[in-house]
Length: 262
Image 1: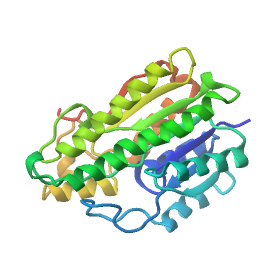
Image 2 (image 1 turned 120 degrees about the vertical axis):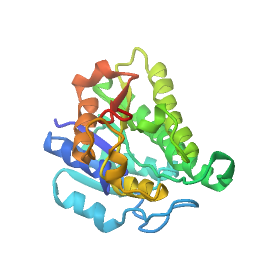
Image 3 (image 1 turned 45 degrees about the vertical axis):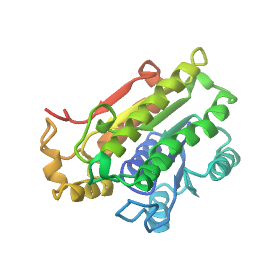
Image 4 (image 1 turned 135 degrees about the vertical axis):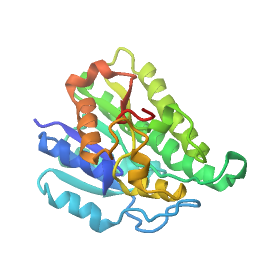
């Protein structure tokens, strides 16, 4: 029986690339996204993905992808998506928490409370909710030792970035969630990993560049490879973390950042 994954933030960017990569490796995938199309919360200055983008991801693999509209801040909606996954595919082996937003452009002391709240609601509580809903299902499955939880953090999760204190704090928290979860999972075989991308060619990076009055390619000059990372490159790293072969990565932060800061 093929492995089954659930991916949040799946309509575009790293999430969409991860769905495609896993499908090409034979997975069945529930592709989940908020699909709001508009602005999700205070401070987010760029539109979210829409339903058409999510459907396009599914059309590429019509027999392998189940779509789900859900906000990762809504635990009941996540539970419904997991239940639909079990009905359609019968199991759950890997979860990728890729949904996230960037908000910034101001010093810490100038950042409005509601902007910080947005970052923690989506980036932190979203990952927490995703783990809280999916990990018990994987533990109750036929092969917990082959199951994986992967959270998309950021190069910002281990360093400070100018005028992005709230975002930095939220991505540090994602890494903390993964490490705490890995400790809770000792002896189960189910593993938890954080993947920390560098400047990747996504709408979120374009929004980040706007905060600095720069361009995505300008941000890429801060990483050793001196180019943008393709979402498919991050997806390949995530796919390894999702695989049974990825067990040794447990509790790690996988720096897929092209040598950020080099």
